[in-house]
Image (cartoon, rainbow, N blue to C red; front, side, top):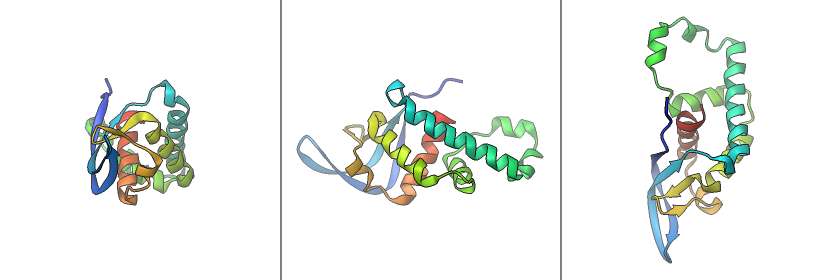
Length: 144
């Protein structure tokens, strides 16, 4: 299965940024797949997700889901909300994961309105709900 090169993410709360010397507001983020420049961060995030899945399997969290029809599972897409739920239900360090994700997002894989690269200053304006959704969607699309 070929992964997309990028996807658009609509924020629920606008953020302020500067482009070409002008103050602007944006509600759209354009995200691209990580490359070898972000390799170490990608590995840390993927490893955290894998550990979350493994720990939840071992705890029996997925016991009822495994009884579902396997044909149904094949057709289901992993959603960002599902990824976030798995991460928060696990015992992984979510503070560390969010810190790693912030570094990844600010390392060249995200642009506000497809114009301005994401910076730590802009990232800190994101609402907590948007950040959780963004983390889940990014993992669902590029890292799963």
